[in-house]
Image 1: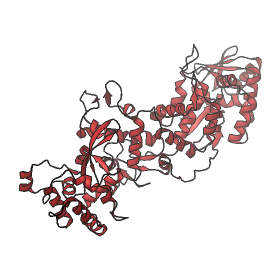
Image 2: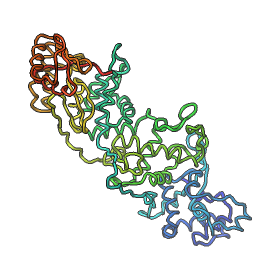
Image 3: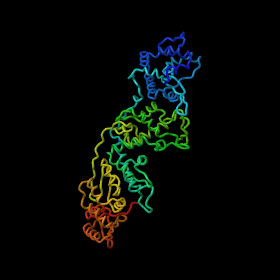
Image 4: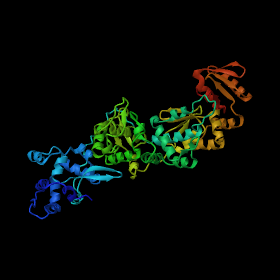
Length: 552
């Protein structure tokens, strides 16, 4: 422990006299060891408490920052926060008397003996620090005011009609979508001849497309996706999907917090680094979260004031002070970003990325407005980042329904495992009013059959989701399993009957619905665009699944 002796022993008697004056004690010039007597006089509990209370608020804030940092802060960082201690010779010091008119908080604390200065080894590096003497710190009264920078956080009031980026549990929903996608269309291998782009369903059903790369990385890093081609691990993926959406989201948040391989600095864009990225993404992320931990929950805070607080308490969350001039970071125009003056464009930009990107995508913050956000607020899910207790999540509620033409709408909040299972045996039709849309087709059922999924699995799944399954849909799924595709639609207009039974049913339909379909030649019919929905409903009632062209 560095003590008051370490702080004063390398200074001269002139400095000791100034410190004695600041503490209101008489300098023992005639003593055999005046420094020892001076230190003994200063380290009186009552005197320390009194002098601490007399310090300006800014000085107490600086001491509080030292205490939070383990008693020492690099000189460069301390000077950046609290101003420098001017270098003076004895003559200038006597002439200007900086202890009477200090130009900074650093000078005020230095000349009153609250600060020491020493070179300290940290790993293989030796760096100069300013420190709070440990024996002096021990006498600061318990419960003494710790003036945190969080007092300067500015609140924000969203406008009445301002669009808010809601956190919810979209990360868990998107993770479910990614797992189902990887199960249906393993990557990177693909079928040799395929007009349909398998990335399309992922884009159709992704709720936060900007976060798909992060979620995919986390699922791989946690072993839920693995192998070549990439596919879900059956046991780990199922265990994840059986969780409630909030628990699953918390698992993803912790995965990002602890990720070794996801480099936020590289991913945020806007910076270029020569010869690889010099940062430790895990260290930076944890230091940033340490800075944010004391922020109020559920209250809107301006991002600018949050960045100012982070700069005040955790200036070095990315670059150590000794390396601000070393890292080879450039902006897109090629300008090198060096020195503490580049903090806003490096650390500040990374902090903004954390708020707008991973923390928002993973449900830990909400943003206002949703685009070009000015403010954020921490959600209850954010507690997972610090392994603190979170509120009990909502129970999953099955909310799904079948439309007349056989498509299925599944609302977010439905158990993840049920939607995953449905997604394995259906076409992905995109989002409609916030709901996932799925449809049955010969192509989708053939894909499911290749995974070992049969009608005996599909129909009970549908009953779990919607209760009573319409007879036409259930019959169509069973019929396809026996007969294969019997009705085809080409170019969205040309309908072809491929079995005698289908030809008979379609001929009867054509006689009833002349505005919908008309015969061209033999089993070939022309479908009107306005009547395509009616056609699908009628075919479903007759227990036929429509085979359509694959998407381009």
